[in-house]
Image 1 (cartoon, rainbow, N blue to C red):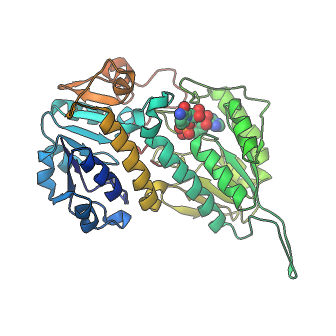
Image 2 (spheres, protein in one colour):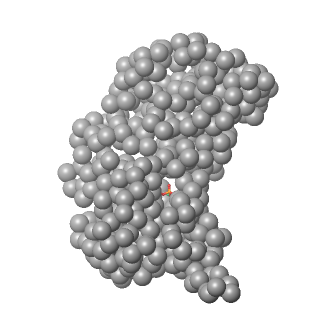
Length: 401
Ligand code: NAD
């Protein structure tokens, strides 16, 4: 079959869906690979490196020749107009936050495959888990950015010019990105504490050398599939108030909390911000146009408050490490593609729970269970009792992805 890689069009997106090493593997498996001119430039991968791996370099219109189009993010209007009936498109499409995209792709007869919907608990899905690969990168980079913005040392330093005490870092949200941020901050020598509404993460935090904080005012709030559920208004207020005391005692706070399909929960209020010492740093991985984990954070911007606290609004951190992120994503997407190829042809077997988990549209219809029923559609029919409204605008998945 023919596979095409497009040049990403998302703002500040530097990643690319396939790297030459993975192109070579697909070629050896008998697939033809088309790469749009300049697709790898953001990850320092020249067209020549793709040609050397056996790909053909093509222009945007020739992508229509492929059976499957691979991308990292979502297709823009121009790319959608070039997708053809019967073609498959793979990407981090975030259809739950923008059901209109699914409608458009279904209307065009495109089979949309969204890597952010991978059923992560299936062992055979692990090589395809792009949320995890990208969240690992985001968590690592978050710790480095926070350390760089902090005007003091992370490690204990004893010198002839004096002793520097180690930084006290607090990580809020201990999923994949949070655990990676803990590990990275620990490797830099910081004293790390962490909190999550899923207390089962305590042992993981401790195994990385962190101290798990347990709040007395909020009970466990695990949801389905290993994710957190949204808190009620009362739980959220209690959590914010109790967290404020912990936040005030830390030099650096990295927030990574997410609830799938919903805007990120607000964990650091303006009251908590005011209690922080001048020179403290907050890095909000949940920063989004609709609000993040930190009140007032803006994605892609660094703000210094009146009391001297730096708030970094993270924006697509994996893209800032495009070479590593593209390598990992390429392995994820090629594993999924290969899984869906049977006897040399792209096959959509919706009886397979892994395939049913990722296929959003097929044969002119929206087929994903989370989107197919109008009542479940977040943008058009938000749940009446939802304490945190579902994002009404497209957002990148949490991997900063
Ligand atoms: P995520 O990005 O959805 O959320 C990040 C963290 O934020 C989560 O740990 C969540 O509990 C936490 N959070 C949400 N609301 C919060 C609040 N109000 N206060 C504090 N913390 C809050 O999570 P993720 O990194 O994508 O991981 C989600 C789950 O998927 C985890 O259970 C993880 O172990 C699991 N997972 C499983 C596999 C696998 O089985 N192979 C692979 C990857 C991830």
